[in-house]
Image 1 (tube, rainbow, N blue to C red):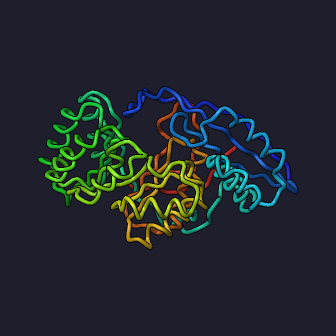
Image 2 (cartoon, rainbow, N blue to C red):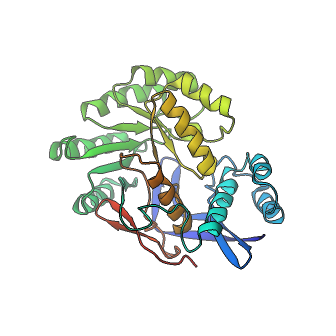
Length: 338
């Protein structure tokens, strides 16, 4: 087996705002492996500033992976435990090598018989921009919308109030993602304001790493709390179990590129279900290569909730997509990702 990689810079069509700043582009690495005339492709989807493996020796480790691609998978997994996005790219490439074309997890989804319901994502911006995005999602038939909040809560709160005046919780499920944008004291107030508006859940109301504060919020919250960044960097099984038992969240949000690929996501799901913690899967600004693999994987998990999968439409220079969004349903279309 042989392997190579190349770096690729995805450019946003429009600067995308989060509580951590405005994103103009997204760096990623494409891993290609070949064996006996067959090829497999995967995306090592590092997220600068957020990924646990955002470190100076990242590309050096990727070169190491290419040089050692023939090694036992268990050995590689151990060696890459501190590089979850590299392991994620390896998992994809190996599965694609096995199934060929643009297949990773063959199913009724890849046969075009079933689709995945997703939420519509609203990026931060001024009120006009956010309302413009919301109107677009509603016109396209979304029944679940997720809004990024935590920069200007006063304005964001007004937007949510307006939405609720127009649509009941039975008509429109509203999720919010704070990306750790509030203090514990602010969060306590915001959680009640969200409950008054029948908001489904809030992702990461306070910064990750404050287990005691987060546990207190989860124990008393009137609005379900979902952990997101809190999971990043926790690779040890005992530590995962300890986090869930300590914080006792209502939900966890799983980004395969950030939590150890499909294997890491499987482990989190198993632990969450054991402790009656809900979960759903989201993408993390991958190119259409990684997004395709995540979508195929997500379908196999059979979670009926709207999932947080992107559509690849944010970038001007993305690879050809094997996914087709119709209203709020993500369908698979059979194209070659070359």
